[in-house]
Length: 145
Image (cartoon, rainbow, N blue to C red; front, side, top):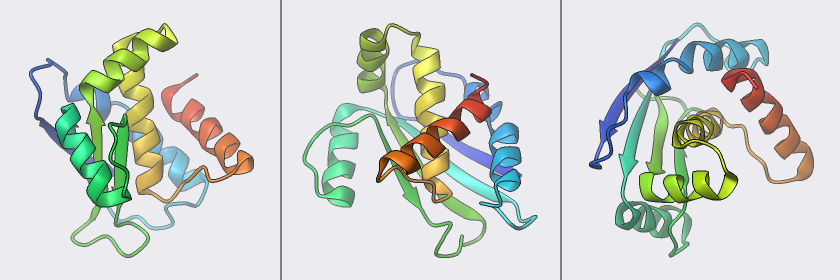
């Protein structure tokens, strides 16, 4: 099972349940793919943040001095301490703009970014085309598209 510690550091009204409803399916998919090969429970700390915060995180964690949509920090592969598998940060203003550009809802964008972040926390990456296709396939199975 994956549990969520949710923090909304923005003024945007977003329900924690939007993300929690994705976790049972994410866990099921990660188990079926043997990405999670234990019955241990995991926790993800998840924060909705502003552009300044995500830019600072991006600079400090990835060496990139730019605003981005989502950042995931994974502790899973190095051994989750007290069940903490990782942290996910989504930049709300960036996600809103991105949703408009992609012509879908803000809710759908948040679901997509959160699922993307969860997969990163559990070690799924997209460094090449094959990995990207695999990640997209897993995301579709989790979000239901």
